Length: 88
Image (cartoon, rainbow, N blue to C red; front, side, top):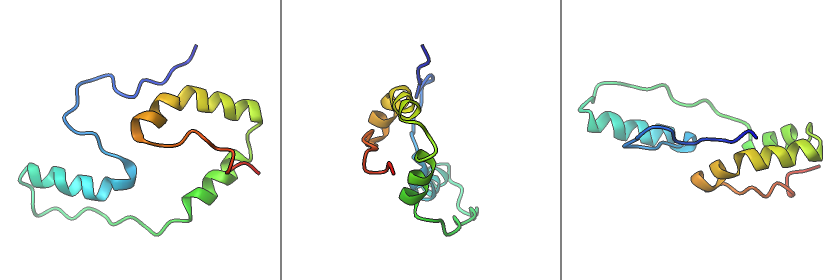
């Protein structure tokens, strides 16, 4: 059985992709690094629309398996595992 293992080592900080710009500024500040300019994220398409496009390419069985495998990650990061509203 394949499982997802979100954290396998000790961590003092957990960053989320959606808040990476803010999180990285915090980390750099805590390290005393003040003169670094990180690249700004590019404008992106609506991520919900993109997720719907990608999920539409999966069979219902594949989608359910994907949810089963990543359910611990959804819970850890506060994401919903309910994708019925995204299916075509």
